[in-house]
Structure formats: structure tokens, C-alpha cells
Figure (cartoon, rainbow, N blue to C red):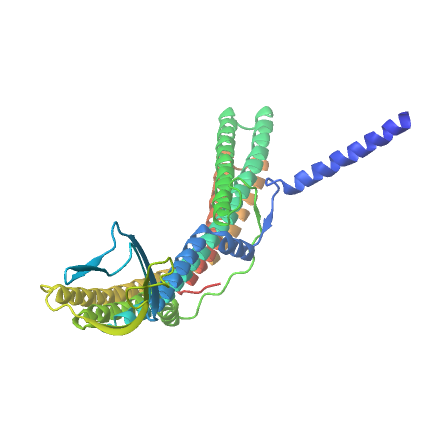
Length: 441
């Protein structure tokens, strides 16, 4: 009996361990290593911004199908049933003759084909086809912006973590310095206000570390939102060690941006749409001509196959021309409006190209400045580290005061902050330049 109970306890324990391990594996709080490429691909796969652009593209594809369908023949059916109180009749020599029964059934099939609409249908179809390209470029623009935002958020996480690391190191070093100060005070080597200064500096460092930790958490949450992870997931990012080189010249970047930027391409397509809109407006000056074919049946039963009073079925072909002769200037005003919209679109393209040129130049200058700042900040950081080391050694020998160590640590913190700001600022500047130049992943 005891043996069986022991076996059951072992099985239950194993089951608990298994379920616990499974729950642990599915726990969203487990840190997940995320590379920059993984973050970009995850965002592109799950972003609601991209889904919105894809849905708009799908809707435009349906609009093109609708416009294309208008070019082909349409087939319509009509069915009518009438029940009369009395059968209709005519008088001939004062004698009534029935012309129909009390049941009147009519149905027909009509085939209608547009022959000429002043190029309206063809132009509308071409306009909707261009609309597909416009929506495609808008999706590319959304992709471009999303990739830039993900990269910026990713490097902001790395930057925030470095700031927290720097703040934590400052806490550790100032804690050690406070211990030294207390020891020197106990030995009567320094005044008590030096100990107080060390305590104040340590308290400030601890506050800065707390703030830095909160900035890390916030930066991770911002990245989680972009890649569609749970908001509070403790996502771990992988350090990026390579720095892309600064492009050799600005002019090729501007030319690349003018050619590749989805926004510029979308505006050019919209300009072609404006041309077609003018042609659609001008089509109102022409008549609309349609070819129609009809087959019809009349009778007294439900399918109108029985008719004792007239021919039971008939067919015909007709050509219809419809032309609005007087519209009190409506057509002229519509054409003028479309031409003005076309001119406005040309002006918008010119402004957009100028804005892109400035954007590319600004991103390029930011990148070159960040590149120079890295080298300057690296030299300053080496000097600040050496200054802190020397000052700390001098304090151990009671050559300098406590405030000198605190100042040296403050300078080192500032130098580390500047260095990492320049380092990750360079990566963010690269992301900005890629977006400005229209470079898609």
C-alpha cells in the first residue's frame, strides 16, 4: 500500500514539474533575445499599420475590378406579375373582346453593351488601375516609416541600458568612495563635511540609477508595441557591434531618394490620375451610346409560356444615344476644376521633392556629425576614465579632497553618456538616412 502511494506521489510530482515547466516556457515575462533584423521582420509581419495599408490596397484592387466590369456587357432580368380584377377587353361593333386574361405575366432578359462614352469608362478603369499602384506605394511608405521607427526604438533600448549601466557603476564607485571617506574620518584624516558630500553624491547617483532603470523599462515597452509583443514583456535585445560607413557623397543619396521614395512615386502616380480625371470630365461633352438586346415573354402562367391573346415571346435590338445639351456650365466648371487639381498636384510634387532633398541633406549631416562625435567622445571617455583613476588614487593617499573624486566621477558619467549617445545616435542617424533615401529592407 505504501509502495503504491509512493509511486503515485512520484507521478504527481513529475506531472507538477512538467506543467510548471510548460507554464514557464509560455510565460510572457521570460526575456526573449531579439536581434535588430528579427525586430524589423516581426513588426512588418504583425503591424496594424501595415495591415491597414494592405487592406486599403485590397480595396483599391476591388475598385479596379468594378471599373473593368463596366467595360463589358451587362445582363439584367425583369419579372412582373399582375392580377387584374377583370380581364381587359376592347369593343368592336359594341361587342366586347378580351385582350388578355386576369393574370398578366411578363419577363425579359436585357443585354446592354456600352459602345461609346466619351472615353469615360476606359479612363475611369485606367484611373483605378493607377490607384492600385498608388496604394502599393503608400504601403511601401508605411513600411519605410515602420522600419525606421523600429530601428530607432531598438537603439533607444540599447542606449537606455547603457545609461543604466553607467548609473549603476557610478553607484558602486561612489559607495566605495563613501566607505573610504568614513574610514578616513574615523582616522581623523578628513572633516565630517567630506563624508556628507560623499553621502549626497551617492544619493544622487542612486536616484539617477532608478530613473535610468525606468527609462529602460519604458524603452522596452515602446519596442514591444512596435513589434506587437505584450506591452510589459521583458524583451532582451542583442547588441549591434557594426557601424555602417558614412556614404561618400550627398548628391547620389538625393538622386536615390527622388527616384525611390514611395511618397514621391505615389504623387507622380496621382498626377497621372489627375490627367485621367480631366479626360473623364471632358467625356461629358460627348454622347453616351449603348447597344441593347432584349428577349421577352408575355403570358398567363407563371413562366409566361402560355398566351392566347398575342405573341408569346419577342426579341429586339436597339441603339440608344444620350446627350446632355444644356447643363448651365456644369461640364465646363468640372473640367476647369480637374485641370486646377492637376496643376496643384504638379506644385505639390515640386514641393515634396524639395522637402525630400532637405530631409536627405539633414539626415546626411546628422550622420556625419554623429560620426565625428563618436571619435571625440571616445577620446574624452578615455581621458575621463584616466582622470577618475588618478583622482581616486590620489584620494587614497589623502592628496585630494572628496569633492575632487565626486567631480571626477561626474565627469566620467558625462563622458560615458556622451559616448553612448554618439554611438547609438549614429545608428539612429543611419536609420533616418535610409528612410530619407527610400531604402526598403
